[in-house]
Amino acid sequence: MIGLIAFTRGGCRLGACLAEVLGGELWTTDRLAPETGLPACGSLREWTKARFADSEALVFISAAGIAVRAIAPFAADKFKDPAVVSVDEAGRFAVPLLSGHVGGANDLARRIAEITGGQAVISTATDVHGLFAVDQWAREQGLVLCERETAKAVSAALLEGSPVGLRSVWPVAGTMPAGLGAEKAELGICIGTTIAEQPFAQTLHLIPKAVTLGIGCRRGTPAEQLREALAEFLHLAALPPAVVRGLATIDLKRNETGLLKMASGYGWPIAFFSAEELAAESGEFPPSAFVEKTTGVDNVCQRAARRAGGQIIVPKTVCRSVTFAAAVGAVTLRWEH
Image (cartoon, rainbow, N blue to C red; front, side, top):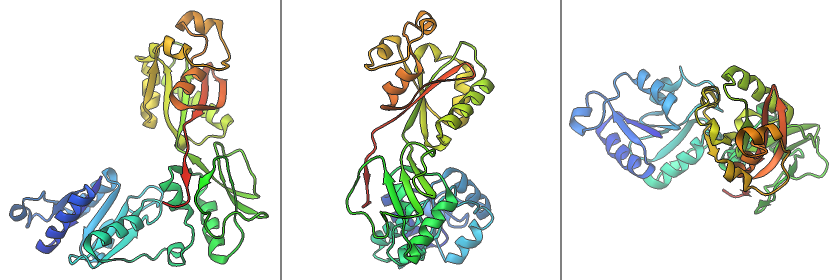
């Protein structure tokens, strides 16, 4: 979702072009709305507040100062704020104002400049010096950046020419950026499936948002117990909640109120499988006679994780009478975006 807003007739014309190409929705002022047929924004403050809540990016077709004043009350965290770009109504300059790397404002400004034939005005230090930007690369590769302060340290080290190490569970195609891969480094990046591994004295962990949790629980288990069990499991597994893409379990749990409520609280979808589908998974799975008698299959959590998620990274684990397992899907990484 990209929200665009224009304040002049010329801005509306450019905005309509950008909205069509970028796939966004364009608003304008209450004064111009009847003439242009565009939706009216009403209060600019309320429009901006609403777009911060429902949009991945905001584009102001206006002077940069208008955009800066509009977003100032709502800018809080570059890891959560939407991308914000200001572009003049002639399309000459596209200026990323907020969330340049993590939110993608720099890339959006470059895309707008391509459309308008203008120029993207990029001011982030790593871009200015042509260096690797770990936060932007992580976003592009679908990786969760786990330690914000360490990410800043990585960028600072690259800017200073200090060594930055690298360790990855998966191969990364292409040419490694300059400054990475030092054999002896106190600071480095670890791309893997857990924050437990510490290959460097100061380690920045990047984990794919590709982890599925298999779950098994007794009928009627309340949501609070499930949340407590989940927190315990994630702590034991050294997995941040942000890397989880969803849950998986047997279809007998389709109407379990506690499970549905817990998953909804995290915004996670649940994949449901029949006993036959789970039993068809090949491999070694810790069996339970009770679970087999109750569900028709000897193991729910690990089989479900494997079925929905791919490679098991954490086998069956019992936390507060709830069973969990974790699996990670296929991961493909490239240095070039």
